[in-house]
Image (cartoon, rainbow, N blue to C red):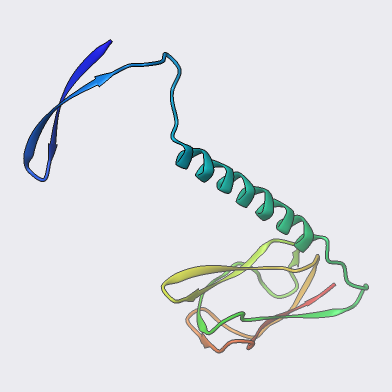
Amino acid sequence: MIRQFKVKVNKKDYHVEVEEVASAVATSPIADVAKKKMENTVTKESSFKKKKSAITFAVGTKCEIKAPLPGVVGEIFVKKSKTVQAGDKVLILEAMKMENAILAPATGKIECIAVKTGDSVLGQQLLLTLVC
C-alpha cells in the first residue's frame, strides 16, 4: 500500500510517497542499539541503588553527611531527632543549575543539622550528622 503525505520543512512543501512493506512496526538498527543502552543503564542504576542501601553501620555510629560539591542548600526535609531510613531524601543541594537530592546513607536519627535553607556550602562541608 502506497500512502502520500505533504510535509513542510523550513517553510518548503514536499510531497512524499511511502510504501508499507510489512504489517509489523519496523525499527532501525540505531533504535535497537539505543534501546539496549537504555536497558543496561536502568539495570546498572537499580543495582547501584541496591548496593548503596546495603551499607550498614554499628549501632551508635555517627555518620557525617557532607556536601558532595559546592552549592546552595535548597530544602531541608528532616528535623533534629527525626528518624530516617537509608535512602530517604534529607535535603536538596542546588549546584550548577541542578537540584541534587542528598540521601541518608543509613537508617538512624538526625543528631545535628549544620546548615539552613539558603546557606552556601563548599564541597565536603558538613551538612548534618546521623546517629545509626
